Image 1 (cartoon, rainbow over the protein chains, first blue to last red):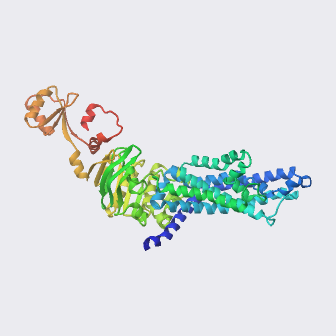
Image 2: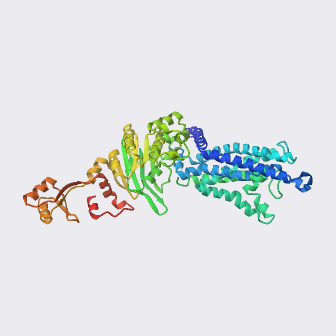
Image 3: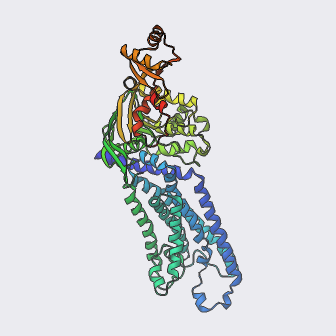
Amino acid sequence: MTTITARAPARARGALAAEWIKLRSVRSTYLALAAAAVTAIALGYVITHYVASTTNWATLSPAKKANWDPVSHSLAGLAIAQLAFGVLGVLAISSEHTTGLIRTTFAALPRRRAVLAAKAAVAGVVTLAAGELIAFAAFLAGQQPLSAKHLGASLSDPGVLRGVLAAGLYLAVITVVALGLGAIIRHTAGAIAALFGLVFLIPQVIHVMPAPWDARIGKYMLDNAGQQMTALHGAPGFFSPGLSLLVCLAYPAAALATAGFLITRRDA
Amino acid sequence: MIEVHELTKRYGAAVAVDGLSFTVHPGRVTGFLGPNGAGKSTTMRVVLGLDAPTSGRASVNGRPYQRLRRPLYEVGALLDAGAVHGGRTARSHLLSIAASDGIGRGRVDEVLGLVGLDSVAGRRVRGFSLGMKQRLGIAAALLGDPGVLMFDEPVNGLDPEGVHWIRGLLKSLAGQGRTVFVSSHLMSEMALTADHLIVIGRGQLIADAPIAEFVRRSSRHDVLVRSPAGGQLAVLLAQRGAAVTAETDGGLAVTGLDAPAIGDLASAHHITVHELSPRHASLEEAFMELTRDSVDYHADLPAHARKAA
């Protein structure tokens, strides 16, 4: 018993080290993060530029002024950039299944849940760091055209820092959910399709439902919860940023729990 | 030491391994032979704890694989040389495996040298030939300097120089007292490498014997005789105690008398002989004979070729 417990930290360290080497030794990691950064920053800038050129604060209605959200405008590109993070998460495990490398991995580390946990930890930490960098960069870039017309926000304004931090965190959440889907489905294309359905299709279906059902169901959707914890002004009927954060975190937890349940019950 | 006991593995209705038991001992190369689809790879996956057996068990050094404390130091395995991420360099591939059990960069460079890949260590695996990937897979198996080695079809895709290298490597690993378990569907390859053979077909054990005994037990030797007076000669041969079987094309397969004796006999009776050729069934043919009933798909051979086998 003592030997087993003594080995546990070494094994966790080994699993983490192995996954860290794997993640940084393939080009797809850098490509995905670069694609996400370019998409998020460029799209955010184009959108805020358009918004700035078509909006005149003086003539805005009081209702629109009250709901003015320069943060969400500048982070709009993240809605597309999240796909690149999702692909990164899926590939972190599905590439091992499609090549058969997973057998080598499991032979070296027969405790499969430790492998899954290490993959989630490494991918989660790396994409959290990258996600925050991208969120801040997109925010700062997007505020340029807005600020020129006094429509922008600064990080010291109420709710702004929270919103930008939440947007970065959301990208890491998507990555880990995608990793879980990759472990469950074990095919790259299938897992990416499932992720697409989860963050694009299902929210669209719920969005067209009649009120109040769109919000009653929608507030539990990952995509909406992500928006609610980022937005400066919460939409009526949806959760607060704090509760939305919990909804967001429930998704990777559920995906990893399901993957962890299946991973020891299936042949590699 | 690898032990497989009453192992059965079903995939749905298909039985891949069916009540298989054998032991692989250290200090010699044990060949694991069987036609494609016989259950060799499945057995190896179960030994490595990758597939769960339907019933029965497998163990390495007396313990189930999952219970090994540091698997890389006990067992090295090459299952599929293609199981690599094409975008990763050979060194990164090995570093990631090594890191999972705290094996350092020095050992990675050492095994790269051992398999002769040191000059391409920094290249992406995508550009590797199958032979280079086999070498990379063997390097990975050697990382922990394990006492048990398991290779699934390691000579596939290797050039003659590579095949020669593998043979030497397997023998030297066994010579160091390690357990070496190598699968193949080629008897001719095993004849040159293995000391001991475990033969399976349709998931069941067919033979488990030293290769020398295998050769003695399975090989057939006879003499093919063709003569315009075949019937007369057959009677004379039978009188001398030889066993004579008529081939479908008119030849006689004779056992119990060697070629010179048959020639002398024919000459003494003024019988013309058109052909007199000693035939030795090769190990390959012996293997085909042994596993014929357990091959799932085989091309129909002409009748005389079957006879020769």
